[in-house]
Image (cartoon, rainbow, N blue to C red; front, side):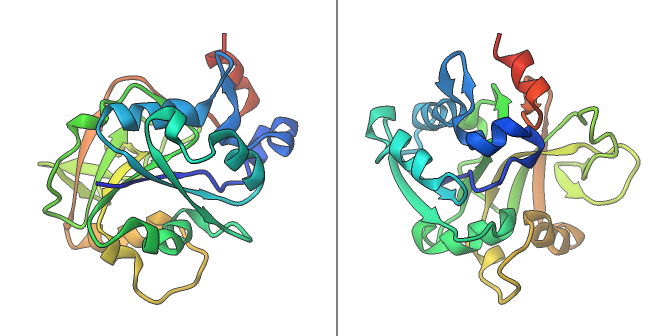
Length: 215
C-alpha cells in the first residue's frame, strides 16, 4: 500500500516561523517533523511515499531528496497554488495508483501505530479519530459501531490519519477542495469506517505548541 503525506499547507498560524520554514521541516529534537513520519511509515511497511508540496517546495525536496536515507522512496506532487487537502490528493492520484492508500497530515505529532490500520478496506475510507483539542472542541464526526457518522453529541476530531479509496477523488469538481468535502457524502451513506485513538496526538499549528513539544 502507498502512503501520502500532506505537506503543501502555507502554515499561516505558525506566524514568522511559517514564513521561513514549512511545517514539514519544523524541528523537533533537531530533526524535521516530516522525517518522523517517514521513519514511522517505513517501520510499518510503507515504502512508496507521495508528498505534495507547494510553498517552500525546494526546501522540502532538498532535505528529503528521494527518501532513501529514511528507508522509503519519495515521489513529489508539486502544486503551483495550494489545492486544499482534497485537491492535493486528487492531483496526486497518478502517483498513488488504483488501490486504497494511507494519508497523513504532516503537522501532527503522534505515536499512533500505523501497522494497526486495516490491511483491507471494505469501505470508501477508514478514519482515525482523536479527542477534541482545545481549539476544536466541537469535533468533526461521531462513531457508531465502527461506522463514522456526522450526527450525534459526542463527536471526535479527525486526526489527520486515514485510508482512502482513489475513487473518492476522481469525480469532476473544483481543483481546490477539502478532504472533508469528499467525506461528507459517503459518511451520509454510512460508507466510512473508523476508530478512536486515545494515545498521544497533537496538532502542531502554533509556535506555542511547537515549543511545548520541542523541549
